[in-house]
Length: 541
Image (cartoon, rainbow, N blue to C red):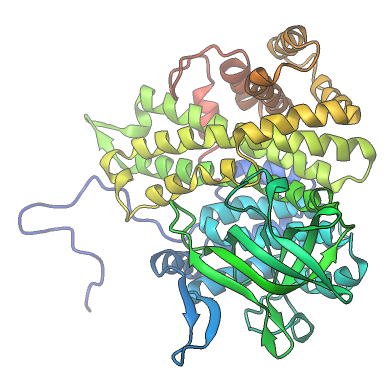
């Protein structure tokens, strides 16, 4: 019988001291942190266990590799010169989209069952480890639902299809489809995050509108529709632009696809509206207020996605050090390496913990939870994404030169690391949003302080840090100090989430090294961590 295994005995040397290649994985069984934090947040753990096994299976892992290797292609014209404005994807991309929608990525939060947002959050965490590019259209489809409530007639047609759990990439108008996806096109060349500077205009056409202008960034341009912003006589207004109309294509013209650093399996584009048909969502002049509901929910995903990316990088590093030796010792048995890994593990679990705490708040309907979610998601987005880049870089370094090779997932993960810190508000925008929310919504500040004070008495060092924060900032800081203020609050919030839901080794380690700051500047430059207990959480049961 033929041996189909790769050949290790080569003509000039033997291949050894290489960790056994791993393919299939189980995102649920292999991750004690997600099991515990998802359960604490009230997520649907049985469903997550099933999805974790499926998404880590060989078929979807291969689909993810295929989608990244065979990138989206822009097709502006057909062979006869007719305009089509389409993007073609590898079948692997479509397989990933179908898996995400069927698992409830876009629908679980809206099906009326308990733990919907928490379940969604865990799926975001999984998706970031499998193929983060696909998360963009899935997240926007999930987050569009609350924004559409401002337009009952539009909502009645679109929301049942957005939440159907059915993937239908066919080029048909919305009435002819059982499932649909929805994207977003807001920013323009001259304004970026300053959407009030948008120049796209909307003119009435009976009960509908026609849009003319451009959008500098339109992700997932093959979605069935897009929430967008345009100027009317009353000011900036939110609209839904359908991609396909009855018997014709809407006049939304693709200009080019973005050549991005990462997130390459997902197409992002520049577009123009040539009197494109649109439906108003919300009142004229209330565009920002309407679209902010979508932004609020996409920000939850920008909290969980970096947690998933950190987990993917940490898992790769942990696998490597368990199967690799240097200087007559396994890497996992060397004290300095153990310190580095434990430090990375604390950051990774901390990001997941605060994300799942916020998802649980999204699931609650009382006013205090809603107020807490508004401020908490901005704080966690800021901190998780600032930490993400450094954690992934350090995990890559654990693999040495191998971590720099495209045959490993590490370069893809590293290229992805900055994205969620930019999407839906970069660092300065988020910090200013924090100040604005605390100034305009006293209930948000009160709800946040209630959460921070709910764990007082559990750790004297945390208590002292909370007192020091309030003493340093008895009122809101000057704008120039917004980053320090936001980081301090975000660290305290993350610590509170860990004190509530994580083992003492992780919670105390975070307080020691992040809140108190008893450490050096880089990963592993820390003492006092309960290294053995922290690393034990990375072992598969």
